[in-house]
Structure formats: structure tokens, C-alpha cells
Amino acid sequence: MNDPNGLIKVDGTYHLFFQHDPDSVLHGPMHWGHATSQDLLSWTEQPVALSPNALGTCFSGSAVETINGEMKLFYTAHSTSADGLDHQVQCLVHADRSLSRFEFDPRNPIVPNPGLEAFRDPKVIWHRPTERWIMLVTEGQSIGFFASTDLVQWTHLSSFGEGHGRHSSGPWECPDLVPLTAPGGEVAWVLIVGLNPGAYGAGSGTQYFIGEFDGVRFTNSSPPEAELWLDYGRDYYAAQTVFDREGSGNPIAIAWAGNWLYAKQTPTTAFRGVMSLPRELFLRQTERGLRVGMRVPATVRQRLETTATAQSGLFEFEADLAVGEELALALFGEVTPQFTIRRVHENRGHIRTRRQDAHGMDRFGHGYDVEVEWPLGTPLGVNVVFDRGLVELSTADGLTWITNTFYPETLEARPRIEGPAGA
Image 1 (cartoon, rainbow, N blue to C red):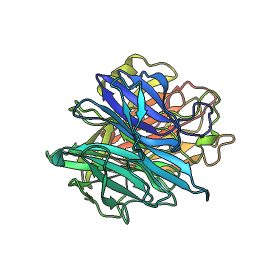
Image 2 (image 1 turned 60 degrees about the horizontal axis):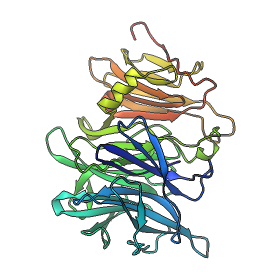
Image 3 (image 1 turned 135 degrees about the vertical axis):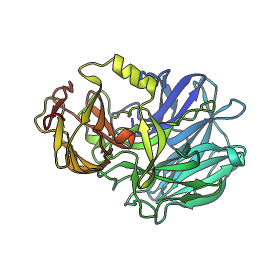
Image 4 (image 1 turned 180 degrees about the vertical axis):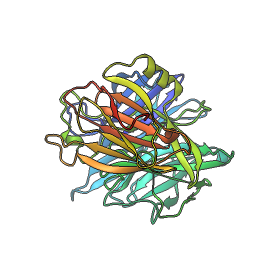
């Protein structure tokens, strides 16, 4: 499994679709796997939802509920042309309300390819101010915006990306667009984009932009060269938010906890690929402007606290350090710490994230620094959620996340903290 697709909440049930090859632990002909949950933590796998057809395999996409309660899925049909190039088009699927029966629309593709090799990952949202549907699609190194009133006929509106944020040799992937309310009460739009390769920690990663969306085009509020990251770890990619027509809270995102630099080499046999924790998105005002923060939903956090084991759970601590001091966090009984926190200024710190090389996994090991905002006059609070080899660390009240997978000899986390007295 890899990218999450079609996250949607219907009648109290969360549905998670995902890129999946049901016959292999290697990346193969993509289907849509399907799982359901009542609490975003315990999931039940359902039968495969979408399988390849005459238009091709089923790449990433999204799901929506119309005002009439109809369920619609959107995905990219992927095929290979006679000259060996990718050919990608956007397709529509009708589903029953339980999301157990699926019917491909006979008019597919509803958005034909305009001549791009990378033209995929349709994310459909409802834009209330203009009362129409908006579809975001990967257009190589940019994101295209389309509009529709009937979910079938789509008009290209604009594109965003050239000269903004970070670019690399690969396309921007798995876009998403969500409105968030800032502390001052104004609404800002957050455009989420996957980058592979070339992310902050190398390989796959997820950047974002804060700006305005008027129903036609997205305008970046930050300088074009600014780079903002949802997660600074190696394993947080293709983040998607849950469509919830009745929802009134902050949007919830789930990402694939993997990295294409080594995803096909992970030392597992019964499965390959995992999802991140669900995280609520919110906006915070910082000295550098508005920034996106994330936090584990309260209900999920309570479950983690009450069901903790030696292999999965969460723990918290405070880094009470003077400038120049540091403490180290080691997991899984290993001698070398995975995280070292150092206070470098009254209001700034660095987290050094390390990972040992793993047998057969090229470019898995790493060591690099992540800057973190340090609250003046108080310790730095650190939250760590671990689930066997998946570790998701957050700090600075959710402004900084580092998500990394590990393949240790023992799955018991057994956290060990070493630092100056009082830390």
C-alpha cells in the first residue's frame, strides 16, 4: 500500500481508500484498497474497491458526498502508450452510501489528458463561495485547478506552482486544498503538495503553501522562495484530508508513512507500507507569519493513552535546557540516539534526527537538523507516538513534526532520555 485516497466520513464511519496491489508486496498494477473505522485508530480492511479496467490501472484520487447524499469517487486511470510513455486521465466512479458497491461512469474519462505525461491525483472539494466543485490535478511541476457544477463537465481555470516553493526532477503529486481559520478570525487557504524526490529530508516529502483561493486561482501569501513543510521526517508523503460534509471541526489529514527512495526495499514479508496517525490541521501566528500546525485528535490521543504497550503508545517529556545544552532520545534499545534536541538560542532549537543504515535499503540512513521554535521562558514540550517501528515526534505545540520509520531488532520502544540534570 502507498498513497491514501478518497478519505471520507459518511454516517459516522471513516473510509480510507489507498493505493494497493492485492497480489504483491511490490508496487504493481494499482487498485484501490479500502478500510473503515469508527475512531480513526482501529481499522477494518474491506474488499478491494477499484480494480484496473480498459482505461488502465487505478492511481490516486479522492471522494466526495454531494448535497443529495450521493457518493462519488475520482481517480486517475493510468496506462502506457505504444511508445512507452505514461498516459493519465481523470475518471468518475459512482458508489452506494455504504461505499461497498462501485460503478465506473460510462463517460470516462471525464477529464482527458491535455498532453502531459504527469497528469494525475484528482482532489475534488466543494467551494462554498462560488457554489461549485473544484478539482486539483497534478500537471507535472504545477497544480491545475478545474471547476464543475455537475462533477462531469470540467473547465480548466488556472495553474499554480512555477517559481514557488521547492521543485525537483519529479512532479508535484497528491495535491489538497483546505480552508483554515487563523487566530485573528480570517480564513486562509492551505495548498498541500507532495514532492518526490528532493524533499526536506531527501526523497519524498510534503510541502504546503498558505494563501488565498478565489474559486479560480490560488495566490501564495508567502515569498515565492519560501519552503514550508508539514513534516520534516523521511516518511510523511501524499497527505490527504478527510471529506466530511457534516463536519464543523478542523480538517483531518492522513499520509503514507513511506519514502520512494527505499519503499520497495523495506524488510517486511507479510505487508509493505503503513499510514501515519490522523492529524488535525490548524493555523498559528508565529514571528515569521502564519504556519500550519498539526495535532492528534483528542479521541485518538485518549485511546493511545489507555491502550499503550511496550510496542505502541505515546509518551511526553519536557526539554528544560539552557542555551547550548542538549538531550538525547534513544529508542528500541539502541545506543545511538534517534533524536538529539539542542537549544541554540533563547527562542530557537535544533532537533538532530538520525537513523542507522539498514541492510538492503539504499539511502535509508540519515543525519540532519530540523529547526524548532522554542517558547521563551519555558521548556520545550515533546510528544512521541510510536507504533512498533513507526515513530511520529511533534514539538513546538504541533508546528514541527518528524515522522520516521525504523526496522529495529526489537519492536519495544523502551525510550531512554539522556541530558543535563533537570532536563
